[in-house]
Length: 117
Length: 116
Image 1 (cartoon, one colour):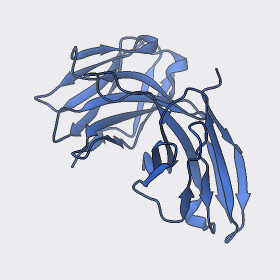
Image 2 (spheres, rainbow over the protein chains, first blue to last red):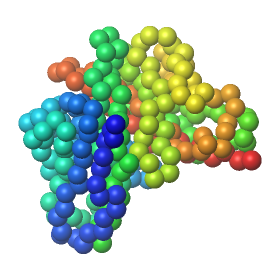
Image 3 (cartoon, helix red, strand yellow):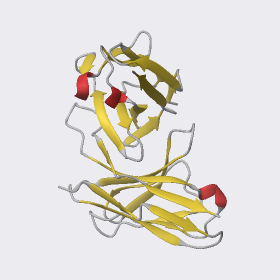
Image 4 (cartoon, rainbow over the protein chains, first blue to last red):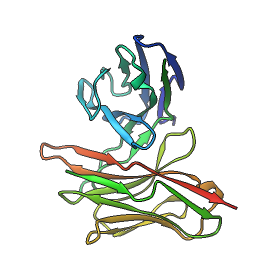
């Protein structure tokens, strides 16, 4: 059981370039999300999806695009990379919460480290 | 609006001594609370969660946390630190949104260092 798989693990871009970070999960979770992690700021939500065909913005969506054509895949697109997008990106899926049991558990990928020059 | 405050950005302990990582939260409703651990160059992994059942929650690797509503705290403890506990720890609060769904808020993290 692979869980959540992110590719690539490392990427260097020049300002203005575009790229896609891939995320796939094999747990049949409806909910998937993208976070960025910056020193001293915890994790901030970029975009999320509650199921195939449904996406919504998180806290810091500007400069990023997502789509969800299947339950398994949730790619994150950087439209025109900027140095401010240098960060570590995490994809996470979430198990459904049990009735009366609150929010389900997040399962994270190992991260994609992006540097924009 | 919900928020999470991790009171220490860095904690250093000696191997075999107790660990205390502090977390305070604010929430409008009855929240779910989590602790996640992140080892270097890895994703986050769930340590434990509180979801309105027992206020003392036991997690993996000997960690536990106590939900104290009167103090709005959810501190993480372990009786005896091990070198392998060195990592970054995140406290997370989850609130239900009025329109349905949940909003997760992450603390800024506490880096735990374990010394010989």
